[in-house]
Each structure stands twice: as structure tokens, then as C-alpha cells.
Image (cartoon, rainbow, N blue to C red; front, side, top):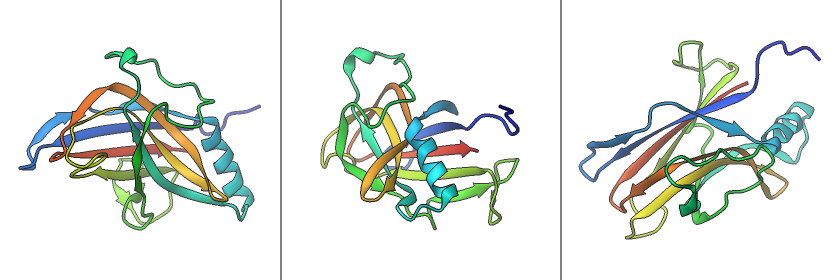
Length: 173
């Protein structure tokens, strides 16, 4: 089979800010894994399946301590995070998702590139607690079920309740 436009891929960047909005951490751009269910959702959208909806939420998880500082990336068959926090961040398609042009500038015109902006704000994921974050995933919905689109595992990020983590995810189709 011919591959005309390249592979479906994703990348993310985390920036962590303290309570005074000073930059504490910047991961730079790192690749993530597009999982099989993400491809299934894309096929359902293309078919105009009435049960499929777009990017719905982001889950964050504490992962496993045994992953250490260089965790193995998840298998494409993964369907959920290993140890997700209870709270998730809902994604508003009008304010949190943008089309990007070839130079990564936001544009109103549909393109083959999306950027999802997710803010894990004060007291997320747990009120008044410092949380360890080692994994995250974007999820769409099929019927009422959440379906994972992409996943990443990374070295632990210590996020204090007063801090804000800005996570940008780019998906290239």
C-alpha cells in the first residue's frame, strides 16, 4: 500500500509555572504515541459515524515509580492510562484546539495539523496536594465510551497544587 502523506504522528511540550507565573520547567518538544483507538476514531469520523466525537478530554496519571526517569513508551494497543487520576480536563474545541499552518502558526483554515492546549491548573489533579505526573493521554468518545487517541510516558513531573502545567499536544495527520 502506498503511503502518500507520511505517518500520523504526535508530539507534546510541557511548561510548568509556579504560583507567581514564573517558568519552572520546559520539556521542549517530544514525540508521543498515537494509539490504535485514535486511528479507529479517525476512521469513524471519516465515515461520518454518528457515534464518534472529536477530542473530548485529557487524562493525567501518576504512572508507575518503576518506570524511573526514562520510561518505555506505551504500546500502540494501549486503551487507557496505567494509573489515571480521577479528575480529567475537558477540551473545548472552540478555545482549546487550533489548526496550525506549515510554520505552526494558528489559522482559521482547516489543515492537516492540530494543536491542543490543555491547562492543568491550581489544585489539579488533587486539591491541596503535590502530584507526580508520569503519563497522559487525549481521549475522544465513541457513544459514551472514552477512547484513547494518544499517550505519552515521561520522567516524573512534580506539580504542586499552586502550580500550573501547560501541555501542548500537536497531531499531524
